[in-house]
Length: 478
Image 1 (cartoon, one colour):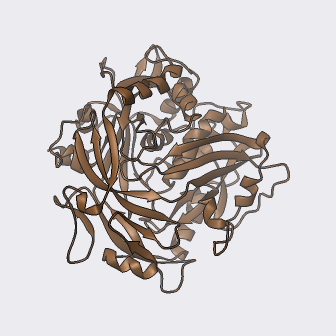
Image 2 (cartoon, one colour; image 1 turned 135 degrees about the horizontal axis):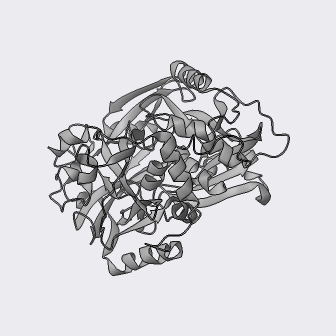
């Protein structure tokens, strides 16, 4: 069965250093024969025009196949699968002694996010898809080859089959370049994980009009644009290995940071593991699932069309009716999380001993499976820190907001996961610390090279999804 096959790792795995060298070569090819990069935004727009894509917010009572459980008030699907919206009671450092209650998405099943790769004219290319997600601010974005929940690929929705799923399921069919479980947004999901995979094939694949082959360099150019490359694709590509692509002194501090395994780093990998383990051991995070109705105790208000917080901040739970001509199911309805304001995900970088280092924090979020994961230097919604009754500025927010244009090296608005979140966008930025910026940082922060970050991404639950986006976007700096 497909469920059984998913837990088996295909037998052939690629050498990480060799993959890193091929990735760097692909990054240097900024256009390709299959799809000129300048055509991609128009190609996505044309798919949106030709398709039938509609998303309409509706009252909860209009959700087909969904119901509020009479026993606990949780919002569930008739099948008992997909996901549920429940209540979560959290005890954590920085919260009131009695803790905090909020709605949370509970989706225990592990989904599959997969990209097919192959060499074309000696250059590594990636098979990307024009895919509609109901929460995308622009409907269609560049997505992985396969993007499916377990309920999707086991046919709970009774929809069409998923193209190319067999390349990830059939043991030994393809070489594995990436295969790792990674988390998703831990402020809205409880312990959510997806299997991130890249498999390489040698066969000539004819993918059809919804797919195109792109080099890594082309994808990096598209990452400079707002809302083109979706979150799942960014997450997978960040997990590609980089160390070992160059040896000796490559000259460029960014190249050295990603690709030279001998580049000087401020801390060793053993020290990094020990630091994060210490944070996980000492910080408090106690999670208890509770009936959804109990979140009203912390200011959540239930209406016919939304569940929102009485402060007007944080997020809402809404219902939506959806139709999409290129999905496995043509029409359905579901709950969605709608953030109230955009977030800011910023990475401060600094040249230390000739190597670019990134300042990351060990962040505790309510839904984390393992207490804390590494996050961007600044991970917040700035609007939550302005005006009366708001929280104080988090560390380094003022530094980022005050950065002169000449030190901003990456700046784009990117969408978050459109399958569960409605119009969730964040500003992602990479800024260089000015001369004289102190390398001594608070105990929950550390300086890492990008090679160290990508080595951690070979394992689960080290980098959160927002930091994974910034890691792949940092490739655009060289």
